[in-house]
Image: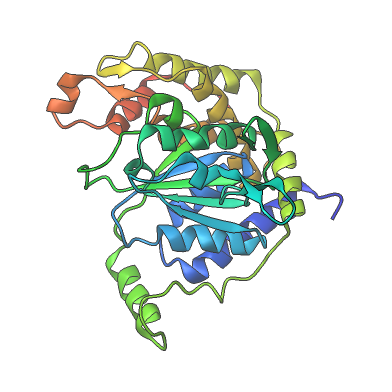
Length: 322
């Protein structure tokens, strides 16, 4: 496919959503936000307790566009070379050859990323930002499209290492995955315990909707979605407000404004619109900004969340008339 219309692209993305839904029961908001980040060419940090289908979601996503999938289980003894790869000496040829690590893939699952120390976490910085890896001074490109989906458990903090600000800023979105609704959990239990031995992940029913090349076409089409200057100004005003808002000790940087517009374009494409509206900005603002700001100590003591503060900002910042 060399050309694609906006309507075709929107239909394909919604088909991807439907295919993922065959394996992942419920979690529609998480699926939607993950697809928005994929179209915008960004990475996602998924936070939730174990057993909510994070791995199943990522594997299903890769299957929908026939993409390569790799998983790294982050542990305290994981080394940077275990992620990126290394040069090794071949005794037969008497030459050094590169052994590429698991980052050379389309969809990378960095499972429990906060279980590895900062040095190991930093091994992902280059590939997340530039889609390339430097090994012993030599640069290698990873396959495109490329996306990192990292997970972390919000409950178990013992033996974990908080992600540094530079690492957090590389994630386009921070998504919360919550417990399913009662009926969704019942459907899940029925699906997993019928005709399957153990609790292995079942993605055989997930079909391939498009190819990596056609997905890149959709990503390129996303960048062409029109954004009115007043909408850009609205996004910038929201982000700038986080830097001086009472209750926040750290505000979002310029990358927050850029990310809002990138994500809003993807929102518009999914909805088959050739332009961004202020509502697109509002709908994606929380997952886009919640990891780029920090609460003041007083707000933490009062059990407020960053989402609470961001909602108050969205309520106060006037949106342009459509």
